[in-house]
Length: 582
Image 1 (spheres, rainbow, N blue to C red):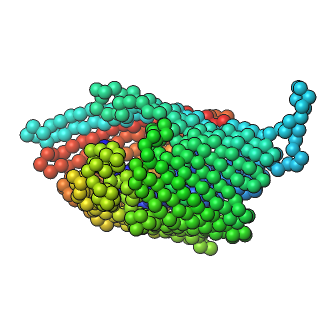
Image 2: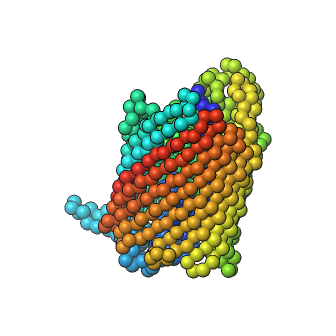
Image 3: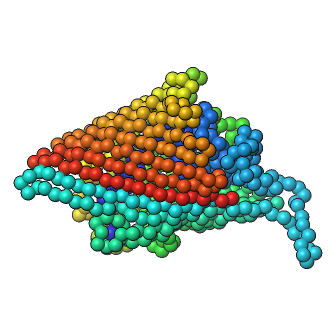
């Protein structure tokens, strides 16, 4: 059975993440550092277009502690997009700007590998048996990490009349090990690249504990092989991979081919089986698959790029999704624009419309806009299974006709939208002011097929203002003072926080944070004060070994009508080690 709550939480999280995307200009750490985490995630998810856009935006900022990292990984994103000329230029720029930088060796190796591809004639060597063979360039790079996470909670209620209660238990205790590795072998005409991204989550809880997952999990985000023909720029990638373009809705097991037709036109073919969660480590054996095609057009000497796509998916013999749409992208040194339209021709409904734009004026003022309308979850026939007691469309077909199944899918799908506007105004060389306002709504669903519908959240608003400043205590420090207000239909929240980052020498980083919030629940009259201080310490050794410790505390007091006061406190702890290799 597919859980209603699972899809509701998933869709709500997606809507909220779209709202937070508009706040990227107001990074929680340093200028660009919030974007840096988002860019790194996009690169890890193989969403290279977005990674390039975000790294480019970071580099448009004034020089800071994230600039070198962004420049290095912009080159890597260009390289993985098979934009080798761009990648060479970025790597060369890095080596000139950072001759003693942390990534100098890595970048130099990658540049040498790219340069070796185009050298003619190919380098040759004499083997032990006297035969001549082409020398090919190859290397392995990536990272491996291990993270321990722990959290607990204590609840004390003093309400009198038998309502006293005290509970203490841990809510998380697990060890997450991850590996992200890319291995490349390049020759004069062909290159082969394999990518592995996954991990293992060990849960220390047993079945008697009130928290925890009660089981270990194997995670597989990516496992793919890519073959590229250098002279024609044709690319074939097979295996588990991620895509947010071409009408593909995320991670899948299958094939993707890139076929350049001219210098400006490219055809892309894609097909396979969707992957719902990274814990699904085997290929989906059900009758659920998709295929599609897209066309990319990049005018010569232009900052514009265009994509048109068509895709179709089937599930248990029924049409699951049939959509057409397109993307439009514009990137320059200071400005960017991205739009996406996805229209389902089977259900005759607009599935997704997204617009993300950023404009920087000559005086340094930066304006941002995000508009996002979508069906939540994205409208597919599979949505009909939400809340049902069966696990397949075949089983559902024994109870309902095809038309009724499509109607159930529409009834389980809500309309959601989010509009965010932001403004960043430099105040001085060390300070800037950021303001953002967002409006969003998650719509209602219908009651049908024995599944209860949900009411709409109504229109809700969020406001945020930040002062981002540096060099208050030392030359390389950064401080963010934040004030947020959320005006919802069920709750209102007002919060204030300080987030700082201090650099101690070449190896240590300290990040103290504190957040104070007042919450007033309109629906049940509960009011709550909370305070959350934390401290993160990071140490880098030999440029490739990274150690991290973080500890935080959470206190809150709640006034519950008729039940009295409730005090909740908790601790969370994180310990991590990561090693980069190349």
